[in-house]
Length: 309
Image (cartoon, rainbow, N blue to C red):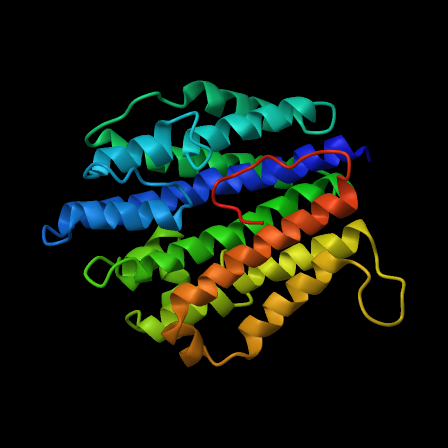
């Protein structure tokens, strides 16, 4: 496969998942601002922008509308939903000969339907619409693509982004002492509440909910599940032939992240949740760079404010 096509597929997966994850995080946190009148809005908005990797202007007080503009509808802000929707569509255009007509039509229609302004109750509707469109695109990709290298690159991008966005969502627990979404709200935001109840059979506790979203091997939005899926994609793209170690640095880094999550006591992770989630985000960025150097050496990955070198 041409490296430019593989790169486009990788970023289609990432940008679809990024739009979906950003919508979920904004929906949870902005709802908190509406429900809790004691939360300092400026502090909470700045913290949320920081978690999403967007710079907050220091010279004025921030309000809920500023966050919606920056992270939802600003087509020039690389951390926004609108930017991700447009980028997914542009990458699909470059890989048009590989992706299915159904997937192209979904991404193109989503790009066309993305509003340029939104307010009031329409904000929640927008986030729901983005989640539905992302689910539709993901479902079509899974049901119309052969399980070849093209599907592996798309799924690799989606899995890395999902691990990153789940880490960002969990990091909202540590934004401020007086403004943190409940674990029930976080579980519901990723469609995990019912699955959690079936697994733990009780009201969400901080330990169990965090354990479920980070370490559950069966729930598809957990960080561990996403990391393991990304590892499998890399093995499918280039099967391992050496008898000792890993020649692929991306696989090696993912293995280190997985081992850290699986074998570190959950109590230690909870006690240092913000730092651990930041390490996960840094690891996904490093893996992306390793994938670029290995498979897309002549192309530059799209820059995103939230990614660090």
